Length: 90
Image (tube, rainbow, N blue to C red; front, top):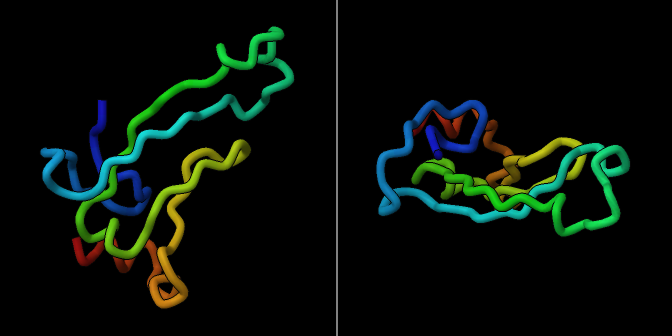
C-alpha cells in the first residue's frame, strides 16, 4: 500500500490517484546471487510508487539494483533544486 510520496524528503501523504504521478516498477533484490535459484522471473517484484504533484513536476523515479528506487531530476534546471526544497514547496 502506498503511504506517502516516494521522495524520501517529502512528507505528503498519498490520498488519491488523481493527484501526482503513479509509477509501476519491476524491482529485484539487491543481492541477486544469493536470491537466484535458477528462475530469474521469481526474483522480479512489481511495486507501485507515487510522487506528489510538486515532486513530480521536478523529479522522476529510477530503480537502481544497488540503491533501490531513486528520485532523479527531470532536467538540468530541476537538478539545481534540492530534494528538500521541492518537498518544502509541497
